[in-house]
Amino acid sequence: MAKGKYLEWITEEGVALLGGWARDGLTDEQIAHNMGISRSTLNEWKKKYPDISDTLKRGKEVVDRQVENAMIKNAMGYDYEEVTYGTVEMSSDEFAERVDAEADLFMQQNPKATSEERLRFIASIPRTKEVVIKRVTKHKAPETLAQIFWLKNRKPEQWRDKQEINHSGGLDNKLDLTGLSVEELRKLAQTDG
Image 1 (cartoon, rainbow, N blue to C red):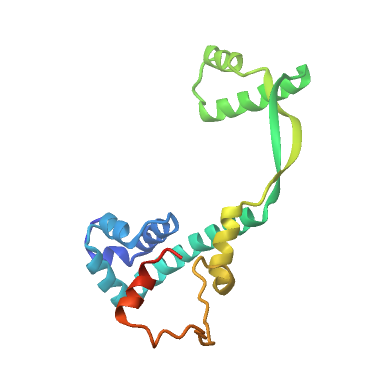
Image 2: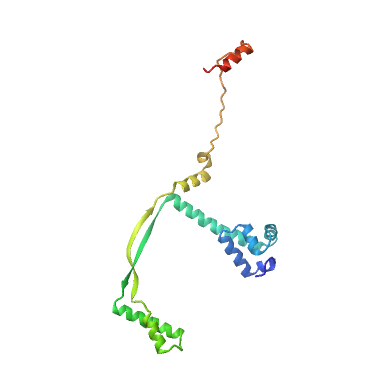
């Protein structure tokens, strides 16, 4: 695709490419670089051409939602299934069925293959298969960091690091220093008591 020409980027192909970059998480600066233009030009095009602006916005929203969903999942914890596979020997009947199916496909894709090539292909078909050996349901514990991030952003009044405390009362100073001289005040200020 020619770089730097807006007409190329408002085509179906161009819009699809822009949407893909946005979904991949590229920044506007990176997208502009891929397009062969400056970021300021991209900003101008986003203002002038709704197709470009809407495509980038939609693509980024998809990724944002996916990340949000993953963070929420991590904050809450979740169950998942771990599957272990192993290799086992096929029965004679299973192997015969596999050979028939794969040999037919080989001949469809290679109609000019010789008998020798067909036999070599059949000899290369493995006699084993992958099977599930074990399924285990596991639990991913909630992540404290994801919980903190969530709470600080969703409930900042209660969870932000810096708490603002308003004091509406006054300070009652019961100590009257009005009768002391400057020298006496200095002595009081220098004492360790």
